[in-house]
Structures are given as C-alpha cells and as structure tokens.
Amino acid sequence: MSRPIGVLLMAYGSPATLEDVETYYTHIRGGRAPSPEQVEELRQRYRRIGGRSPLLEITRAQAAGVERALWARGVDARCYVGMKHAPPFIIETVAAMAADGVSRAVAIALTPQYSRMSVGSYHTVATDAAAAHGIDLRCVNSWHDHTGLIAALASRVELASRRFPGNGTGVIFTAHSLPERIRSWNDPYPDQLQETSERVAGAVGLAQWRFAYQSASHTGEPWLGPDLLDVLRSVHTAGWREVIVCPVGFVADHLEVLYDIDVAGQELAHELGLRLERAPSLNDGADFVSVLADLAQTHAQPDRPMASYTP
Ligand code: FEC
Image 1: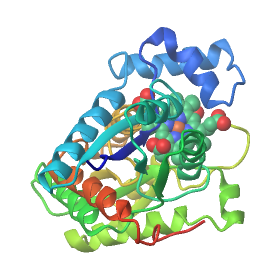
Image 2: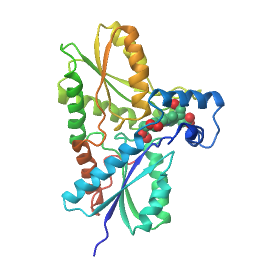
Image 3: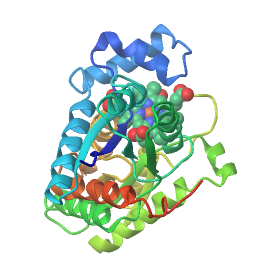
Image 4: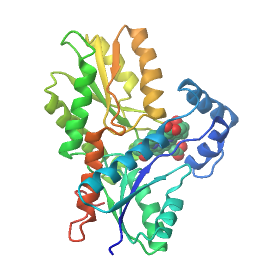
C-alpha cells in the first residue's frame, strides 16, 4: 500500500492566552526579551481583538479543507499545521508527520508572495526538520499569480463593494511590511505584491486602486512603505470618501488584519470621514482551499519543477 502524501501548512503563530504574549514576543525577536512596556502594548492589541487571535483555528480549518479536497480528487493526503513562533511549532509537526509514517511531503507557507525573510525562513526550518527525519520535502515558493487566488481575492473585493451604494469607491491592497534592506537582496516580494494587486484590480475592473504596506515594526531601521495609514490620509486628500482595504499578503483573520486594519485603520478612517470596509479574509473558503489543494497536488508530483521563483 502506498503511503499518504504529507501536506504541511505553515503560518506565523499566535499566543494562546494573554499570559503567553511575553514568550511569543521573545520568540519573534529571536530570543531577545522585549521590555515590559512592549509586552503590555502587544497585550493591549490582543485585548482589542477580543483577547486572542483566531489564526490557529483558521489554519486548522484550512488544513482540514485541503485534506478533504485532495481526498475528493483521489489524492491520499494527510494535512498538518505548523507555526513559526508558537505551538504547534513546525519542527514538532514535522516530527509528528514522521511518526505517522509520512516520507514525502509538500510544505506551503500561508502567504502567497516570496520573501527570503518571511517564506524563506519557514522553508529553512521545515527543510532542516524534514532532513532530520528523512522526509522528502518540497517547498512551494510563491503562488502570488495563481489564477484561483486572483479570482478568490477579486470575489472578496466584490463582496465588500456591495456594502457601498455608489461607484466612487477605491481599493487599497495591503501586505505586511518588511525592512527596506530586502531590496538590496533583489528580493521578489515587492514585485510579486505589485503583480498580485494588478491582477486582482484587473479581474475586478477597478478604476482606482493603490498599494500600501502595513504592520511595520519599530526596529530602528527603515521599513518598506508607503504605510496604510499614510495612504488612507493621501486618498482622502485626493477626494476618495469610500475605501475598501483588501489584504493580499494575508490569507486569514489574525492580529494584523483584525487590529491593524479593523481597529487602527478604522479609527483613522473615522477621524478623516472616510468610510472603510475590509474585504473578507480568504480563511477556509472553498475557493481558497481549492487553491491550496492545487499547490499541494502539483508540487507532490516527483517530476515537477519546484516553483515559479527559486531564490
Ligand atoms: O494573529 C496573530 O497572533 C499573529 C499575527 C501576525 C502575523 C504576522 C505576519 C507576518 N509578520 C511578518 C514579519 C514580521 C517581522 C517582524 C514582525 C513582528 C511581529 C510582532 C507581532 C507579529 N509580527 Fe509579524 N505577524 C504577526 C504578529 N513580523 C506581534 C512583534 C510586535 C510588532 O512588531 O508588532 C519583526 C521581528 C523583529 O522584531 O525582529 C519582520 C511577515 C508576515 C506575513 C507572512 C506570514 O504570515 O508569515 C512578513 C500573521
């Protein structure tokens, strides 16, 4: 009997409780403890979204959906979830996959655009763990131009636009910022974000749209911009009164969506007199789950070239 293919979905990770915020933040900072003020500021952001992030539950629902979708296509697969900064850590999940007898697997970081700092670091951890357990692991580098992803994002923009009566609405596509120094590495991240945004704008037929970065950290070095809050101010100055914010670098509801857009973005929009609607997240929607199942299925084929971008 042939063994099932393992599919490892990897996401950022969240603290399970407010008490876990300090440990989580220390892990994000590579083991450097944050100050008590920084911990409190982060706890406060979690409090504002109801005390915790739904990221783990949503990632598990995405994995269950991908497993079902692959089974429906006749692919014997077992899907797993591993997190970068919180339990279940990627390294523990890969060990569990090995214990289940998985010998061939595909790993997908749940963010469509490749950057060495983000997707590259998921792959390093997963590849090292797989090698330690003798698992033949293939990593999907980027899928920012997958037609199913573009269609799924376009449909979320269309859903949000139904909440506006007029047609003078503009769209701001967003993604997580990264330190500006990634440009000196010729990192594909900014170009891939531009391409995803252009293709979604084309699919919807948008007359006016912008791209903005969000969620930059205060690390003392410059981060990629323009920032969402600055772009909200500038579109307001340009005469926009209704705006849809559509995150194209995130695929689930979590802190960066629920706080940075739904709280911080909304507060500024309210102050400016702008009406802001956020496009619903992809989460475990059937159309998005089918994109992930496609990626797993195609990359599981032994003769397939690895990915559209090779760092
Ligand atoms: O819902 C949750 O609890 C998790 C929310 C969350 C997601 C997320 C995604 C990305 N990050 C990326 C890059 C960085 C870099 C640093 C950094 C720092 C933080 C902090 C929190 C945090 N991130 Fe995050 N990120 C999430 C949460 N992130 C909390 C620490 C406090 C703060 O700065 O706000 C800087 C690290 C450092 O200090 O050295 C860099 C990227 C993504 C999108 C891709 C992905 O999902 O993996 C890129 C979700």
